[in-house]
Amino acid sequence: DVKVTQSSRYLVKRTGEKVFLECVQDMDHENMFWYRQDPGLGLRLIYFSYDVKMKEKGDIPEGYSVSREKKERFSLILESASTNQTSMYLCASSSEGVGLKSSYEQYFGPGTRLTVT
Amino acid sequence: GEDVEQSLFLSVREGDSSVINCTYTDSSSTYLYWYKQEPGAGLQLLTYIFSNMDMKQDQRLTVLLNKKDKHLSLRIADTQTGDSAIYFCAEIGSNTGKLIFGQGTTLQVKP
Image (cartoon, rainbow over all chains, first blue to last red):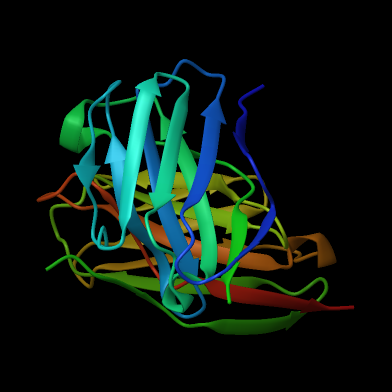
């Protein structure tokens, strides 16, 4: 069964802290994605990766970075958390397509609800 | 640019049909998707339709695609309380190859 797991379901951090959100998939997928979900805005793509050590900026990369050292793991890093980064963060993976065409059927993790105070 | 629009809320009675609508701007989209998000969970692919199709039926779900009007709809027959969720419409942006999501429609099913 397809599985994408995220390290925490709920996280509370202080402004200025460095925050790591971890995502692991067990499907040997090449492509992995980080989104944030906000009410009324849908999902917005932060970063994606179509191979180990490869990363591409999404629509809202400012304030974030990512790391993909192993195929199964994709980390989202908030270098200095701010209150406007309070949100639900969703990780996804997919196996079809390469590079820009890497968005076909995506499998999502349960999400991490991050609160920055 | 690439954009997907949905209404934010729909309320129906159990047993009725639900119709969730979506409009998109990219006429070159190859695939259009419906994802479901249950409370406290991630998104799950519900169904998809290829752009050369007008309709796709899968048990209680019917997807209709009007390419001329760039309109996509999801019909759920005999809606159950377990169908209460947020439904996201998404398209593959032909320029970017990325999934473009709508804002999500919260479906409330009243007993």
